[in-house]
Length: 447
Image (cartoon, rainbow, N blue to C red):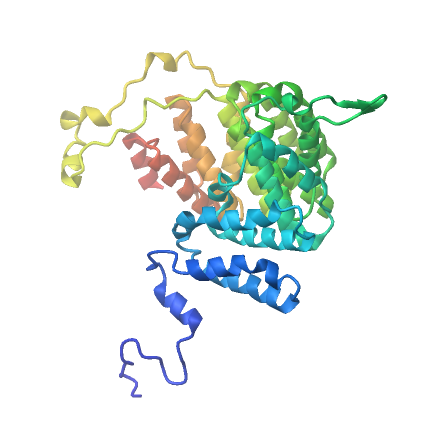
């Protein structure tokens, strides 16, 4: 082929043929439906048959992975089929006559689906009636946390347990008579769930992430928070205090604990979490996570800091936010002159602004977030930028403007590229939320 000659459209180059992977890449984002429904149903239907043949079992598992991977970029196409796929697999899990190996295999398939679609979408499909609480608890209790071959089972069971925590009945009703024999007492369901969650927050596999989800849904329940929230938070702070990010065990323990705390302060009611926020912030400061070499710990530290900041501040929509004027650029430029300014782009300071007191702890939170904007890893900078935007949206105008000024300080020639990038992310987030007023635009252009 001549140098200036192009191959025919759709024709493979010399010595190359289109394989299955090339076809998948060519399709890209053009899939319109879940076209592998029939094959998937057949794969799930013959799990019992392939259990005894190691080669056939691994082949079925790998084929299912390949099918699911085709929908990584369009996972929503799986939604109409999630229910029947889950039902086929849960029929195996809930069948007490099935061998343990088959149950573990079913959970491996469930995990693959969850990995593609995301656990938040998949979560609501788990059965979560009152009758499901005890069986799920018993299944988790029977698991071996040290068995590295079955971590998918523990991960999925914990997610399932988190859904059963949403039943609208007091857990004490499920206990019955805790005293079975004289001088012999059973643990309550509430104690069993919390004990399981705490034990899995410090494991080294992905079950740690699911345990944090369990805690966030369980501890924030109305009947549980009165009895268990204070005790769990004390346990969490003690775990953080005695753990060090210099050791592997310490990193694992801090990771699970920080995840749990961040989710509690996200999903819990503000009035329930506020009494503990100052103590948690003080403990977080003492952990000195910015000095850690673990990216995930630094990210979780920033995430928890912003959740604490939102807890200190009352939920409110800033009335001083920028209100978009005309869609025409020419009209907007004409309105920039004082005599022709559009009143929609102005703001009036509400009377309540002067009476709104900001707790002193918010200053510490903002300092941590501004420090996160200069972190060496993008994932930490991005989390800090989102935190800056969320916190600024609840502050009075003058304090929020100070935050914007601090963000602009990132654009100094004495700062690193990381600080510039973090500053850009923060400005983008502030602009998206309408927290960058026209009066600040000249400051940004000068820098």
